Length: 241
Image (cartoon, rainbow, N blue to C red; front, side, top):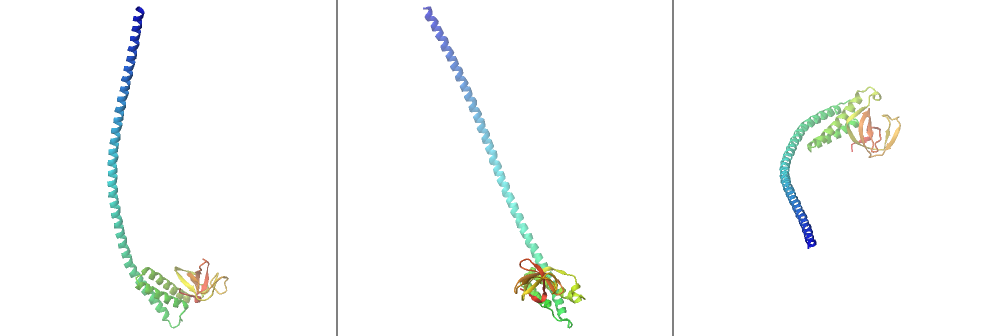
């Protein structure tokens, strides 16, 4: 009887211990779950707050970008208007300036051709053709092209005057054109290393070859050939393209 009572007591202790441990386990699990739920809720709230801030910043950036685009477009339109006004002013200024240069070149060429003691040279013929091109371009409103033709005309006139003023054409200094003059070879011509019939021949330029005159010495023109070779040809062997 005593042995049975002891066993009953032992079992009671064991059951009580197991129950206590279970209660403690359930209490700890419930506490952990409560803490986890609380932490997740706070994180979700923080994420929501950050999303609201991000959306507000996106809207602000969009507003600022729209304002910036409007300012840029306004500035571009202002720049275009200013550029148009500047071009218009330059066009009027160029027109007056080119007209003045044209008149000066025409007067100089007429004075050169009017001298009875100086027969017309090939340079004068080229100058007359260039001046006609300048007048035609000016009438078309192409003032830049007219200015180039006028400058080329003046250069040939100055070349003629320099040749006549030099006591010895061979001793005269070589001069460069400020504006290159496109020309065409009339007949097969020798491209020489120096101005003069006795200079070495660099190449033979066939008739109709396009060259660019960049300078002169006496009645010789320094030209650049299509293959970039540079030499001298007689001004009597060239014509306008």
